[in-house]
Length: 386
Image (cartoon, rainbow, N blue to C red; front, side):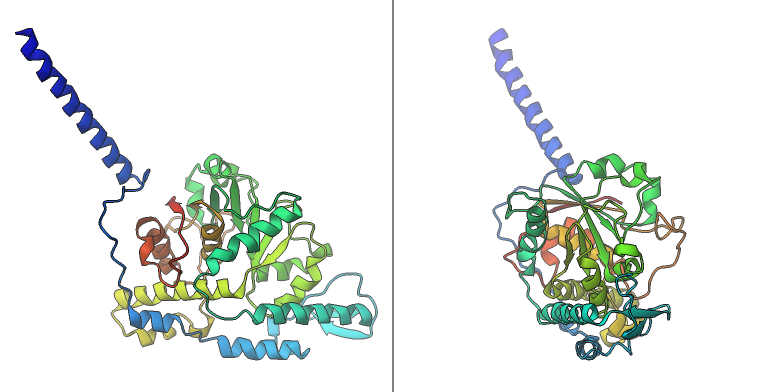
């Protein structure tokens, strides 16, 4: 009798173990802790809306920007309005040339130094603009464009590989309801946006910063300060910046020499890729939500002024330089402020935040449906904390 029970008992143990293992795998997949195993079935290429792709590829503001650049290269700053260059350094103290800052204050410049500044400005602007164009595999170059120069500046061996983990910390007020600070700081690299302060919010947003990502409007404001001070996270923290207005290259040219850490400008091909991706998601959401023709999108989103947010491009940057990307502080709530560190409630209409949130969800759930990115580039694992 005992011999007949033992085989049955062994079989029951094997069944329980198999069931337990199956449950664990199912639970992990449910919470995104592991990726599903390859089922052996060939992946089906996503079907993208050809009409939306076509509209997303059209740059409605290109003609205007091209005209601005031509004027700037000719030395004409008169039509820049509020974006006129701000040159406040005490080094320029003779009245041979007079400009006016964005505040309308006269600026006195010593001619020889100003001449060299203009030459550098024109060279920087020209080199940036000549990269204008679409290149789907530009993501493959981000390590060499960002990590390598940062490592070189720090005297480290130039590693042509991505960082192990990166946290991109947005500025949404929803962070005030979280305790993500310690988790954020546990990443190898922490990327913060537009000089959002961390003091007093460490429990919510952490205190560590490895890369400061800003738009050029931030540097334009910093250029008014003595020495172009723009380092709330410390003078040794590198800055990566995208250009909002071509005239801001004058601020960059003036301030770059005073920065101890690298001040890097995003490749215009990368900017174009980000623009197309966000515009595709905005067009898609517009058609699905409003049921209106895609041609009417331009009236709902300021047409040529439409632009991605700083946070979106910071996330795209992290995708190119990191093996794992964690997203914090992107989202909104009716009870939360727009930014955790300010009292701002309203959003900027030139951004489509809801469309960008759709993109972030696809990065986690369906990365294969994201358009315009080359198949050569493998998207890293993304975790979206909301």
